[in-house]
Length: 224
Length: 144
Image (cartoon, rainbow over all chains, first blue to last red; front, side):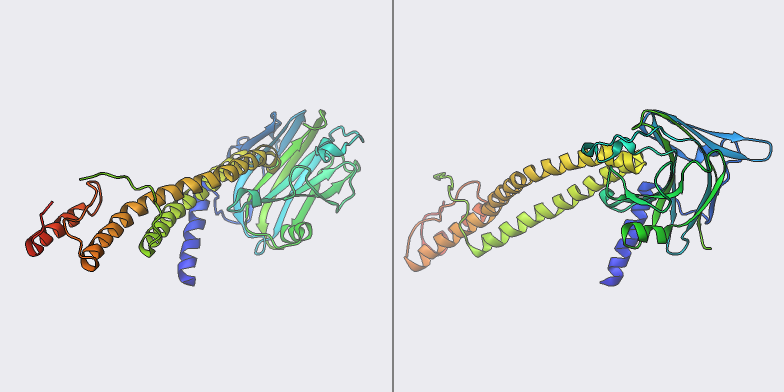
């Protein structure tokens, strides 16, 4: 019985991975943004208008630049890794302009008016049932203190963790390294399953303002 | 042969109950599995297409809630329709058998004469005809 169940689960996983097109790539996966066509392997996902994502290549190296003007769209990469085995992710980011947030927040919208961030790094944990999918977002916020974990006003399965705060490092590259397994456990109170995608987003749709950020040297799925 | 339609669909014999349950389960289970798979396949594909979790939550979840509500309303009606079809099908099989058994009992116990009356469209009409021929051959009654 257990063997039959294992075979069935194998086929379900195979089928699900097939139709979701999640690739089992060599880990750690690096995204150095060193070539002009580096965004080819990413998918653009538009939420409310297009954010301008472009790869800027210098003589020495390259990076990803994001400029948002009253828009929200992200770039998305399907990649499977087990946070229990390879829990680490790291990246470099630089905020050039924060979204213009006001202090007016009405309870009616559950704080959606403030749900804009200059830079977000997502780790997405898909499940067989779409409504059980969870997402861990690392954000750089202007005001919220570092280490703060908040629930997205959109959905309880999205947790936002502030990993960089304030204007002190505005315009400077900041390196982040996170243990996804530990962060997920802290945010959701349970162990994460297999991760299925990462994403980046700079958005200003709720504040109707502009924001600008750069991303670079993304590394996913490794042990420290 | 007199064609009188059966009004009572549920005769309540153990055989009909068994057939009714079998037909009902045989219709419900595959339909349920297909509906469940399609529901999650479509919504999962849409969720992947939308990608950004906030986008999924903002655009897809309200649609899913609406679909769930429609399913909740439509489910009892669907179950009722499936039950009605299962009852009809079970009766088509169990009804003639019950009638044949009754006819044979009347002949064996109450010494009734004449051919067994069956409806032309009954599934067991050919069997009844053969029994009538047998009665005619050994019992001397007229064959119909």
